[in-house]
Length: 238
Image (cartoon, rainbow, N blue to C red):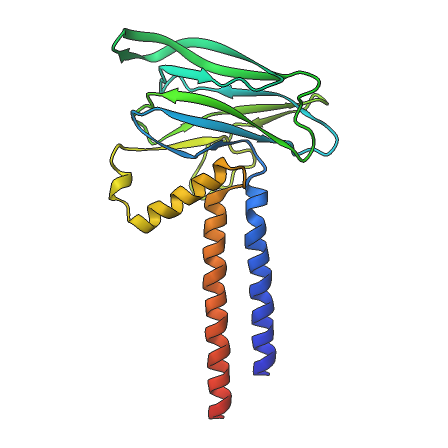
């Protein structure tokens, strides 16, 4: 009986481990911004990663909204071969002071449109690089995104994050930390986050999710080993 329970526990753990390792693939199936963190007041280069989730249509257009209530004075776009980028400007809710004076208007939207040969085909993805700065003094920036397919469908990645709620169409979110905050974090935690960010930049999926899933798997395996040893000790005692 004990052996049967141990076998069932091991089977359950293996199934949970497989599910955990499969999680990054599911989590990375929407439009994301990478890396996902930056420093308030600084400049950063981010990539909007756009996967094609459909089997019978291509992605032909991406629209990214740049919030004007948290103004960013400088927005620069890196050219993507085969894609035409167009920016729209709007009045800033709060003017940004710079060495050259106040900036009252800023980029509020970027639209990338593909030519016929450069569409994002099924099971492929594309990245769109943007330089931003100086970043505002806020906890996060939500970039609402619209993804248009060749069959006319528009997927609205606009759901803002909410505690305890998994959004169906989450918007890309850039988390912002105060200058110097990263230096106060434990070295091991900082190294883990850096590694996860590097994995994101290399296109290997959601690095942070992979890190957490791997740690969970290792802890689970350690628990299984402890259980087996306890079972053996109980058998010898009996």
